[in-house]
Image (cartoon, rainbow, N blue to C red; front, side):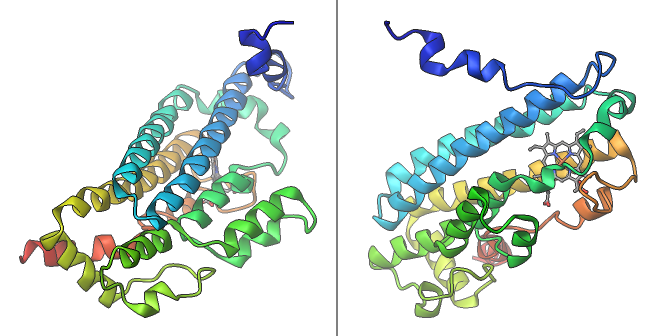
Length: 263
Ligand code: HEM
């Protein structure tokens, strides 16, 4: 049989995957399911692009890195805007099916943790929530052991002949990225002396800011929806989510802003 739109995209299978648990009175549950599934698909796409971006950076292909980053930024914009759709739900609409979620929570999104790890926000604590032999755990373990986007950038810069501090190049990639004064000095020199690289750095900064924007939009949406109630995942809810705000993936790109003003 000839390939069709439906057979290629597996539309029948896809449309079977939205299965509300509550009765028909919980009208908004369909939106809740679809929006989460859409997020997971976009997370998959961003991870796919981030893997390519790491390869491009490590091989010093900075022009193509920018194209990939442009795509990632476009997706990020969409997933931030998607919060608007969820905010059309009233607290009553959510309440109608919230109990059916039991302890399920976005907190358990493995792809979200993969994103965090790929971007350098690594911590072993996350593994406590994942069964030992699960496929999800294996995927996350792989990301944990791999270099991050920032490491790929520094490796590419070093390969291109820029004087990247040795300790930054050989750091333990399973550890969170911490600010580094020598790296900041290099970045300032590059901002001043290597204009073609500046656009790449600024796109990385856009991405870092965009991710923080998503966190902020998510926490405000949660506050609209459940106020100060505990989360289904067992956290303090809004209070916990607020503690995740304003934490950049690439602290050195932020740390140099004051100094750039003094040039
Ligand atoms: C009615 C809508 C939503 C509510 C009320 C809500 C609520 C919460 C709460 C309370 C938490 C903290 C963990 C917990 O105790 O459960 C959380 C975490 C999280 N949620 Fe949502 N959420 C909603 C929609 C979404 C959507 C659409 C996504 C998209 C994937 C999402 C992704 C996440 C992620 C990734 C975390 C973990 C954040 C972190 O640990 O940094 N949530 N959510």
